[in-house]
Image 1 (cartoon, helix red, strand yellow):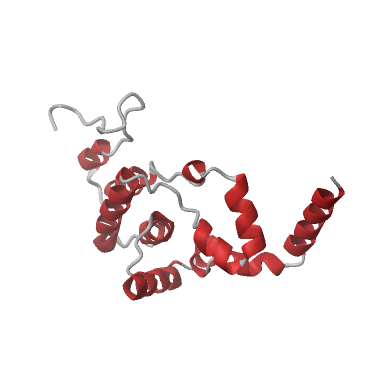
Image 2: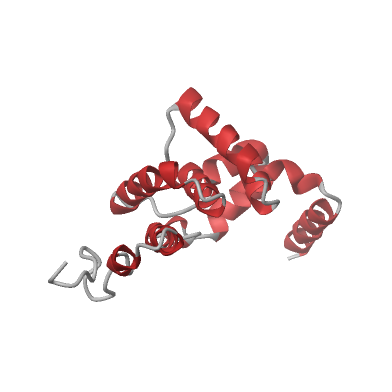
Length: 162
């Protein structure tokens, strides 16, 4: 019990002194500070360099396209994000990168959080598209992007006349 208390205290000290700064990926720092142009450049280069298009990387990119109204890139990004979600990659939390940046905190996060429930972004492609269509004045298209039915997650609730 004393060991757990000491470990908890050490973690709190690390977090409060800024030592956990390296635990947060650069794309997450850019996202949290609203630096969307830098975020787009960073993630686009990262994806091009590594070929890694997991949801943890695509979600901030799509969110930045949405926030900066880059609709020329948003819709393709949402398509790729939806494909990941359909394959089961629903989390915007990159546990592997977190563990590489800070093994102690990353390991604790992996152990404490169920991977499939952390940061589920399933609804966001619908939200991003609907918001874009509203901004573009295409209200009929906006209505097509409601979230999937809770009873049947394989189909959108699109009107039969659409």
